[in-house]
Image 1 (cartoon, rainbow, N blue to C red):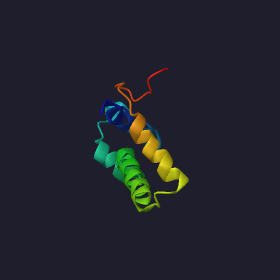
Image 2 (image 1 turned 120 degrees about the vertical axis):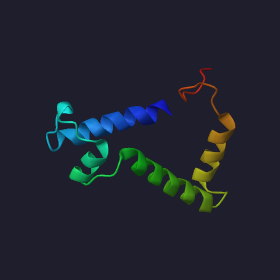
Image 3 (image 1 turned 60 degrees about the vertical axis):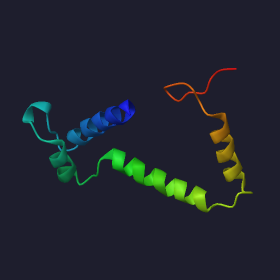
Length: 87
């Protein structure tokens, strides 16, 4: 889950640049989201992932994308960072 924290930090950095708020202005992240009228990026990604998996769940098992998804589940990965094992 470290990548979610890093993503959140980059998201906040970008959002702070929109209204030109500096780090020494001590504005909370929640207030930044209100000022820029943007939800946190992590919530947008979670929402879109749930929508995508909802589509996969409703898909016909014989569809090409459904078979690709089943293949991904079978291969899996033991690497902590999610990369496939070479070879």
